[in-house]
Image 1 (spheres, rainbow, N blue to C red):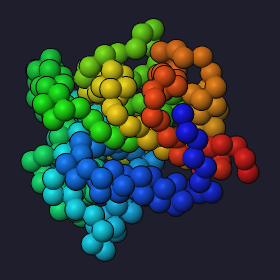
Image 2 (image 1 turned 60 degrees about the vertical axis):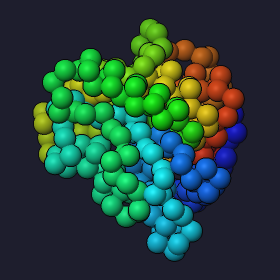
Image 3 (image 1 turned 120 degrees about the horizontal axis):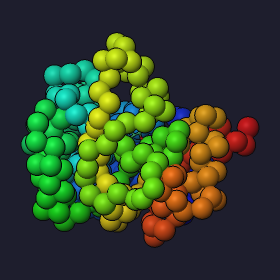
Length: 241
Ligand code: GLP
């Protein structure tokens, strides 16, 4: 595990964007695993700028997102599809038909999960996976539990996750309580992983992820076993300010 310090959110976003840019330059047809939430917004902004300045070409890139709420679709402003379109995809020259997110509107959940795993496999697996970190140690929507998950699956969101994400919805009641997420195996099979951690509120869980026991009760702790993980964390998250 490489721990990369950043003095603040802006520097964290810059460093993450540079690593992703290097991946795109080295392999223009990369499969990028992408995340939503507040952590990657700055990174997407910097990647969009690099594209506008002519440094990056996304035309051959394939993306697979970590997760999506069950019941929400592209027209719902709170959906992760809408988030990705507005924060990244519409600012770059990506082929939108090669950007994948679990289909929140499909009623057959097993079909959604099976098809999503097939897509990841069809494109040869994920070259670089970007992750945020939940306050309870979740990655994607892999919540703390008694065992590590395998492939894409449907989860019941925990109270902690609902509370952390309800600000994106008009009311707590309008927030779905189920979501699709890639499994821990999908994430661990990625060739390279970058984790973005910002803010004092993540300091305690970050310590557990890096130094604590590897346990499904802190899902991100399994990243200790991955051969190529870079955690980019700001001083607040590292508690050095
Ligand atoms: C959400 C998402 C995760 C995200 C995490 C952290 O619930 N499903 O993919 O990484 O929580 O979010 P944030 O970056 O807003 O702190």
